[in-house]
Length: 243
Image (cartoon, rainbow, N blue to C red):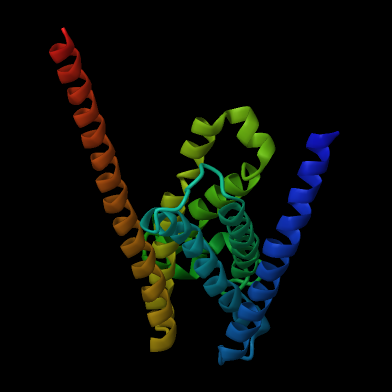
């Protein structure tokens, strides 16, 4: 009974402090990017408007861990904040994927992955920049769904902390796929400088903080190992002197 009450309290706190603010921020960001897009086509504008908030939320999930390491804060295997930001990144990302399948070929999404008959290609699988950008998106979408499906306490308990964390590290691969997809579409659509800058800043921020966190973690581990070695040497010396 006590465990049930603690779980309910935790869920209510997450809803109030994480999910509601994340929903509001996501909705405002989507509305802002929708307004900024010059097209009159609502499908294209909605696809565009969901792409950037999804990327930003994904990047935030990659910043939380290194930020904790740099500030020498506790960095647990599973953080409610990181998990909840990831959930909203997945929600907005899945919405973007669904809408994005209808921007260029209305009702014929398979032409994102194979050439249409008028394009006259003997090898039907797309092997141009457009195809590369779509295939990276497809693999990223599948990975995103898998990460979302396992981002819960049930999977954490069943897989165990170590295996669950190993699987959730596929978030790095997801980021690489999303970055490749985003850069591809920036080139295809010849986007304006502010949007190119947004993507560039997101990618650079994620890489910079990940590298900084990795270096800091290695330094902290090295210091702990050195302190342990000094303590062991001191104990050994004391035992020898005592004998």
